[in-house]
Structures are given as C-alpha cells and as structure tokens.
Image (cartoon, rainbow, N blue to C red; front, side, top):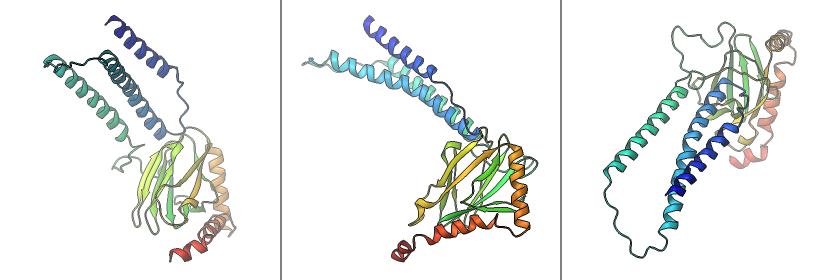
Length: 269
C-alpha cells in the first residue's frame, strides 16, 4: 500500500511539474488568450484525474489478475459520498471557469446600452460579407471596401469589431490563431469583438461548407501599429475618392475566384 501511495504522489508531482514547465506563449488577441487560458485550466484538472483513474485501473488489473474466486464488493457509504462530492466540486469549477470566459464580451459579444458601440471612438468596425465564393470587407466608418486579395488591416491594442453576414448561403468567418469564429447567415448581422495584442499576419477562411469552391474562401487579417493603420486607411480613402484601383482590386480578385471553377459550377448545375 505504501508503494502505491508513493507511485501516485510521484505521478501527480511529475504531471504538475510538466504543466508548470510549459511557458505561456504570447496570445495574438484577448479572445485567444481567454480561450487558451480556459483550455489550460481544464487540462490542469483533467490530467490528474486521468492519471488517477489509469493508476487505479492498472493496480487493480495487476493485483487481481490471478483471482479465481472474486467476492462481491461491499457497500462503502463514505467512499460513495466522497466521489459524489468530488465530482460536484469538479463540475462546479468547470462551470464557473467556463461561464467566466463565455460571458466575456471578447468571446460572446452582446451589444448593450451604455457600452461602447462598434466603430465608436478609437475602436474599429469591419463589415465582413461572405458570398460564393469570396469575401468583401468594408470599413463603414472610413468608407473603405476591399476584397480578399488584400489583408484586412486592424490596429494593435484597440477594440476591433467584425460584423459578419452572408450574401447568399450560410458561411462562417474563422481566424483560428486569434480565436475568432462566427457563422454568417443571409440577411443577418452577427458581431464578434476582440483586441489584437500581437502584430502579425493571421490566416482566415470560411469554416462552413458552402459549395464547390468552399476551399478557396481564404483571407488574411494583418495586425499593424496604429500609425500604419491610419496611413493605410488614408491611402485607401484617397484612392477610392480619386477613382483609383485601391478598392476595385480586391473585388476583381474575388470575381476571378468566383469565375475560376467554371467546370465545377456547370457540373453542379
């Protein structure tokens, strides 16, 4: 029995050291940080439980492998109360931790009176419209529209809102590294909020199968400094007002994406 206790303590200690040893990676957005933090808490909880169950299972198999005369288990009220209370505590922890993340507006955004409106102040609002098979992104406050051929630029350390909708069928806006995902429904606008915390380029795509060219619905989100973002917005606005190709290039690219799978479209029809 003493050896069993020593083995259990050693396993739990090794698991705890392994978890603590992993450095916390920089999170590209507050949304990703919240989700990954919750996953980490559930992992810390799940690994000791898994080890405990496996150790008990292995110990039981080895100890009673040659038992040809098994006897019925006697009722142990104290043990039953213990595992019932332990299970309730674990479920309570999971529920409280999950609610704290899911109720955060950077994970589940719900527009409320008295709270900053999308696009107000220093925040940025991007209208993302999906269609078969491309994307169109509009900055309504700046009157700028781009296609998926250009990265969607947003400033670092600012509130960013993506207003997601669809022009035809159900799509899904998904940027995995930033922890962003929202279904796009026709004639409905759904908003997700985040605060980018790391500059860089992040891949996005449609995460809902929407037809023969679904796999071509890629886009990129580029997180830049506030100064670079302001310069880019000014450049896009001046090109648009002068009739330049700044806003048309993205739409032309998306048109080529739609026109590319002509054989597939014909086969589908």
